[in-house]
Image (cartoon, rainbow, N blue to C red):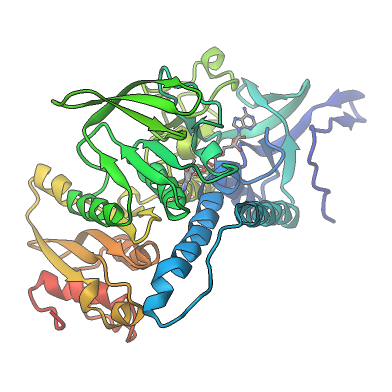
Length: 483
Ligand code: FAD
């Protein structure tokens, strides 16, 4: 018999033998229902554990489903269709009439997508008999959680409380004129001028959305490159292509402050080695990174160790320095990505169940969902050079890929880095159409310890974009066929 989903506080139970009201007791309680937490909860239930997942939001899915991955991709898709209708379709001989934007409809569609996916997680909780408890959780002691004046007992507590946007001093977020990513996902009108502070993937994706819809977008980045975690060649190519699409970049430039005027937010920019300048914008998006969110959990009182960046310290079992308290996802070290959080969500509970699950951190792909997309897995050329690893490079441009030509989407390339001695694939970096999907093959290759020749000798269907990956793998040995 299935237990009801309880979207509310915990229910105490009555012990007839001792005649006492006992707190609800679970094998595992997960705090946070983002992709790390909800996946951990479902997997734990599959493993036969009694599980509850607590979240202070009204909806499941965490940052990712509510204010992150999903709404941003919904708007990227809608704005891409608008951009295609305005320009790209003409090349295909498709004539459309006057193209316009119904921003309210675009936002409503995005909200509908979010709503249906969060309800999907509710369904999965019901199906797997995971109790959903709503409220702000505080860990009172190992095995004990305080939730809205009630107590919940847990054999193990998994912290999956995610992260929050970092603010810039002197630029208070009001989510109207100075916005975080959350505000940038819900602007009521297309700003004439949008300043994006931060050239990481969130700034570039949301900057792309509004640039496609007509905003004049300027990206200001403190470093001398965008997407600093990615291979430098990939970052340079992405910057070139985004510049071509109309986005202006101001690199090696510090935002020293800003003032709210009647008509604009005025930013004070300080380029490295250059004269200061002002930049006026209707909306400023602050996208300078995210930090772990652990407020109100009671970690100081418990003595749970964190590093200088606020990340909870864990060992390979994801256990903190306090026995019985575990942590995963954005709240711990590693890339702040939904799929990384999911892998850790599965690993932490499988390890609790005595399995030896590992997360392969070198095989976690990262994607920038701009147009074209940029995607990477494994090590960059800079990292290999710094580590003194001898490697060979195979590159193949999408302009020589028949499917990319048929689609009229020929920008970009695939670059494979393989060990010079063993041919083992060490890193794959690509920019081009659907790179975010194509990268899965490269992640699999790294996961399986494949050589470049393994990829090259695998039959790829023709005509597909994936053939560019095969050709880049052949190019590692200097024998690409089509170039
Ligand atoms: P979260 O998803 O942040 O969930 C944590 C949950 O914990 C929240 O719901 C919060 O309410 C809850 N919580 C916190 N404290 C408590 C408490 N004390 N009691 C109860 N509940 C609590 N990643 C990708 O991989 N791909 C993308 O395309 C992508 N796009 C993004 C776009 C944007 C605009 C943003 C902001 C992020 C994006 N991310 C993307 C990052 C991704 O959203 C995060 O890496 C992911 O959500 C982290 O998952 P998590 O489970 O660790 O935490």
